[in-house]
Length: 266
Ligand SMILES: Nc1ncnc2c1ncn2[C@@H]1O[C@H](COP(=O)(O)OP(=O)(O)OP(=O)(O)O)[C@@H](O)[C@H]1O
Ligand SMILES: O=C(O)C1=C[C@@H](O)[C@@H](O)[C@H](O)C1
Image (cartoon, rainbow, N blue to C red; front, top):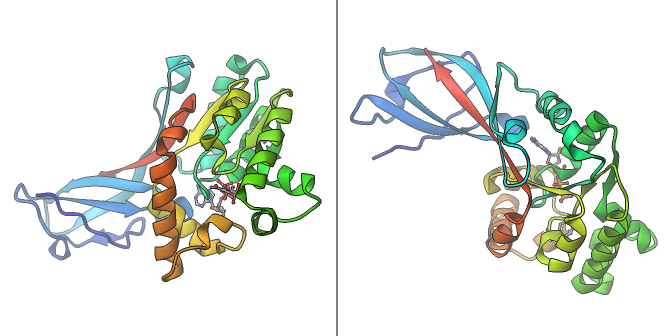
């Protein structure tokens, strides 16, 4: 039986195997979210050769991309030795894909907090594209009210209609990176607009999303206001429900990007 262990792992720290449940074959496996800044789930299997083993830190950051439509040579998994700067990875990948884009827009889709805005800004800079955030455009279209105020005053349906209108307008343009709202994927009509460009799903584990969102608060995210409990648990609960409803819709994207860090031990 595999043992999952949560531990506070620091680069260069010593792991004491005595504190970790062993597997019968004298190895252990654990999953670790690598730091609050990186928040990727790390699966690692380590064979216990000595009482103490030196952890030498992540050696490989593997970026896995899959797509049915784009050339495999561009989007297949790549390894970046000793590289943990996501902006750099995005820039490297951008240079590779730029010749294939022909000015088409990129639509970033994904759950709240998956990094569409953060990644989108870096990507737009790397590609020389303009960046647009759908939520911000909707707020402007509704006279400066925040997303939370729009939900409260006019309801979700009104917000979604505006979202579709914004996507329609953007789909007539070129050389844009568009950070879509987390729920933009649920309306088929939105896909008709997004299909004019390339859609990219930022697929991030729900635990990482809940931690990021809890850290910044849920005030600006009205769909997270309905659960009871501590901030992390209620965010996690609501995100799980939303993901159950939307998982298949995100999978409609042309490209799915997930980052995985592999650890190496000696
Ligand atoms: N790779 C990352 N690692 C850790 N934190 C991140 C990462 N990307 C984004 N964040 C943090 O997560 C939070 C949400 O990020 P961001 O606003 O980019 O997500 P989003 O997908 O645009 O969310 P929303 O759909 O709710 O607008 C921010 O506080 C941001 O700093
Ligand atoms: O996941 C969602 O449905 C939402 C995500 C946000 O980006 C906003 O578009 C709004 O809060 C709805």
